[in-house]
Length: 277
Image (cartoon, rainbow, N blue to C red; front, side):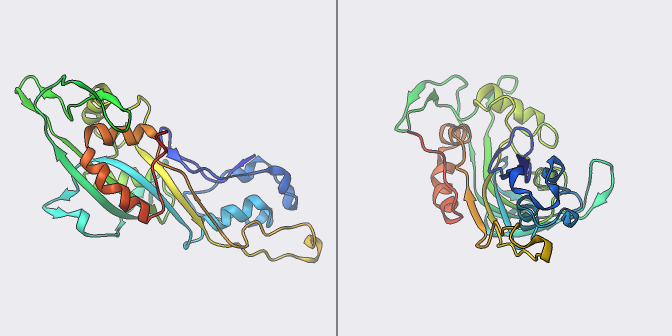
């Protein structure tokens, strides 16, 4: 089994695989499962086998990977409401794992964001229509200041146009809206609050690959390949993965207004939440 692309640790969503048995041309092998996402190169030397066809399609500029991120912040940056911008592009170079500066381009859409304040730390337990039994407060009290700390959260869509290391996470942090649970580029204090008081899973990074849309592939075969190579994506590929229950519950319990607003907006992009049944 060859891995066509990867997800960051703690993230979730679509993963594409191919079976090595289908890699008859070029011999196949596990090395084909490794994508050079940093350099965005297609390993043509391996021939048009299923694995390389999927990689080629994934790296095509017309293919789309749509991520859903739950971030800290209400969608306001330097007085500008990012939620009114629709899709916009961040073109900001970032350093790779070896310290080299690389071009990095990501398209973002801030769907909705809210700031919610409650007054008590412990609150009461309640079981709502969604079957959740949890504490009702949306934040906890800052004991030293004796004032409530607001919950600031937004749901953001992201479509990377280049494949750099932690690209989405770093670009969102650059927009002062770090992904909740991001231990490398996020806010450690906010992450701790969500883990200790708002039921965020310990290893969770709230980034989910909700939809992958691949363009059709074309296969050029030599005489020696005739009859041995199959175009695995003659019509392209469109797959989705529902947003998992843990992210749904974080929003539903602690920022319910946000959930209500984003459900139809996510549906416009073909993305849903995992069934609660």
